[in-house]
Image 1 (cartoon, rainbow, N blue to C red):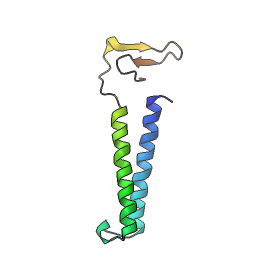
Image 2: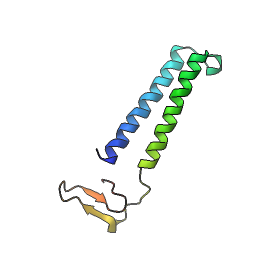
Image 3: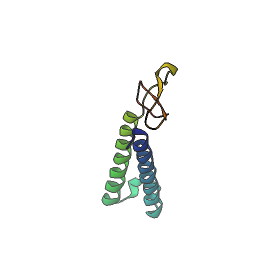
Length: 90
């Protein structure tokens, strides 16, 4: 698996968890989770913490590189361009 594919999976996972959180809030008919029960608050907090952790992992995987022209090269096997500085497929 390439880093790019891993980031796509993380993006999908984050999106799915956010969608579930919204659905739970709507299904439970809460304006705020202060009205909720202990179980609903615990589930909501667990999901919120999972999303924060996934976003932190994503932030570590996404390179902070401008991909300078002198660092661009072609992969000999796939003929795909990539950055030699950060190893990011372009």
